[in-house]
Length: 177
Image (tube, rainbow, N blue to C red; front, side):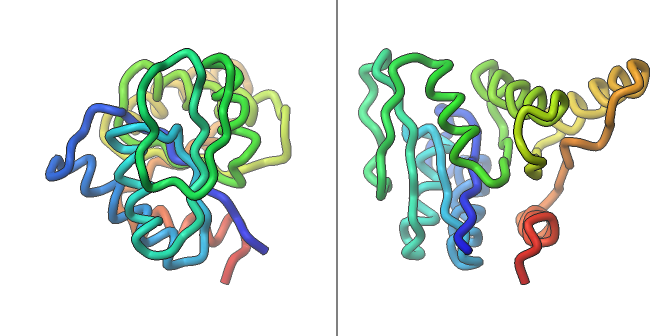
């Protein structure tokens, strides 16, 4: 059974930047492990993860949006277009069997908040959510304290340090051997 991992992250990193290179290696590894990937389809982390998977022969979905005049990156197998930012986020969520949140700004924070809220309110079947970076680890710790205070489920978002840890966690949660 094919599984698709939606990857969220900044459009700003360039080739050679550590964040770009991490996303490239992650996309490569996910493709090698048989995962399809889905990103927002533009530059930066989205491009790097797409290129990594594409270079390994992986299936790469991109959910782009009509409101931006940006050109999608060339490492896309299938492009899905949304009309609005929120339609785009909804499609990115729908297409993912799991989510990885890499370094990013407010757009990435919005995507993390959306997938977390879907899980928190049980708006879809449970899907693993992973984050990578000290910034997200701190955000997760702060929000988990609030979730605990509110009597809600904690540990919904799993901070991971490495590509190996991310892949091992996803395979375990998705029951892939």
